[in-house]
Structure formats: structure tokens, C-alpha cells
Image (cartoon, rainbow, N blue to C red; front, side, top):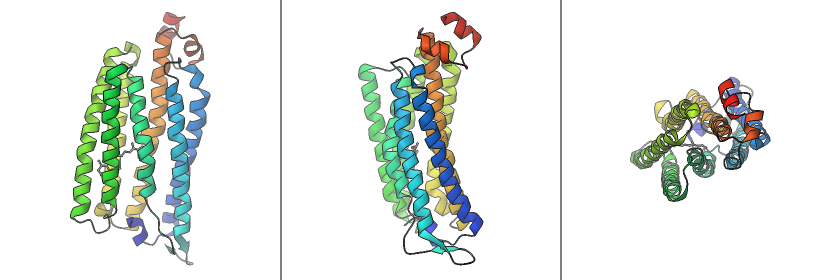
Amino acid sequence: MSFENLHTYSPAQYDSILSVFTLTAAVFAAVLIYSLATASSLSPRYRILSVLTGVVMVSATIELGLLALQWSSAFSFDGEQYVRGDSLFSNGFRYMNWSIDVPVLLTQLLIVAGLTGRVFFTRWASFVVAGLAMIWTGYVGQFDEVDGGARFWAWGGISTVFYLWLLYVAYQSVRDAKALAPSSVTRLLDVVWILFLVSWTIYPLGYLMPQISNSSDGAVIRSFIYSFADISSKAVYGVLLAIIAQKVSAADGYRPSIESSFWLSKDETKANA
Ligand code: RET
């Protein structure tokens, strides 16, 4: 059971959680439109990136929408505070959403890195195996988050081993990307790496939250950190990868990328015109 169910919430706490769910769903819906509408500014080689961002956004919008509905049906107002009703709130949905989004986000990294053929396939296979193993072992562990005993820590530990493997493969891929990319995007690739490292590493903090603060404030903080991590690792990341892909498309001489971009520097535009 998720530890959110153990507590009662003031109207402010209850509303903050509901608002952050709906805000996050709205951000994803917005990025969905943005991504599909700007797909034609990427050369055909990179256009699949926009589609994949669309896939992530649809699944994440649905997930956050469902979490919001579940939150509002799990608690009801007793005149003073929000107390638990007949149904439970569960973070399990998140793990199911990650099962779709994590492999897709990692595939996007390989596409932007410009990898192809065998290398692409071996990296991709490592990502999918490590990503799903990380999520599903964590899923098993979170069922014990309330008692926080040996099983919680053991599954969390196993999950972390898969996470470290995944990070290593991601690091290799960013390094390869920098070697292959035009110089106009090497700094942005460093930003991708930092964004990736920070936003992904926030998720385990959400896992640990019941042990850090088993309280209604802890539940509010958990919803905030998950949303911050979600918006950074899916939405900001998706937009950033599309900017990089547009710059690379422009450097390759793809005209629609050059003509439609307001963030290409003058030099980039002139060099390619
Ligand atoms: C778990 C369990 C505890 C240990 C670790 C975890 C890592 C989770 C991560 C999730 C990333 C999710 C993303 C979702 C985007 O849609 C499973 C919480 C290390 C890194 C990026």
C-alpha cells in the first residue's frame, strides 16, 4: 500500500497534490501538441524523435489524469480535513507508465546520438533490459514501503544496480554523440547529460520518501518531486532533444530546419543557407 493512504490532509495539502497532478498532465498535453506541430522542422532522419515524444506525452498525460482522479476519489472532506474513503490511492500507476516511457526516452537518446546498426541495437537492448529490470524490481519493493523492512531495501538495492548500469550506457551514448555531432551542439549534449542525471536520480528519492518523512507533508513533497522529475525527464528533455536534432538537421543542410528555426545562431543560418 502507498504511504499516502495512512494520512489525513488539510485542504491546502489535498489541493496542492491535486493541483500538481493536473498541472503536470496539462504540461504534457501542451508538449504533445508542440512536438507534433514542430516535427516537420526536423530532417526525416530525426523526425521519429517528435513522434516518440508524442508517445511519451500521451502515456504520461493519461497517467497523471488517472492519478488525479484516483486521488480525488480516495479521500473525502469531513468538514475539517480530507480523510480516506473506501478506495486506496496508489503510486503503482507510475511504475506502469515508466515501463513505457523509460524505454522510449532511452531510444530517443540513441537516435540523437546518431548511432546506427549493431551499436544502436546492442545499446538499445541494454537500455530496455536494465530499464525494465530497474522499474519492476522497484515496483515489487514499493509494496513494502509502509513497513520499510528488509524487502523494501533489498528490492530497492537490486533496482539501483540496474539503474547504475543504465546510467553507464547512457553516459557512453552521450560521449559517442559528442564525438559524432557538429560543434554547434556539443554544449547542448552536456546539458542533456546533466538534465538526465539530475532528473532521473530524483525518482529514487520518491521511493525513499516514506522512510524520510512518513507524514502528510511527506506525501505532498513526494508528489512535487515526482512531478518535477517527470516534467524534466520527459517534457524538457523531449524539447531539448528536438532542438539538438534541428541544429544537426540544419548543419546537414536540411532547408526546412534552417528556415523554421529561431534559435539557430546567425553563423549557423548563414553557413547553411
Ligand atoms: C526506483 C526504485 C528504487 C531504486 C531506483 C529507482 C529508479 C527509478 C528511476 C525512474 C525513472 C523514471 C523515468 C520515468 C519517465 O517517464 C524504481 C524508484 C534507482 C530512475 C525517467
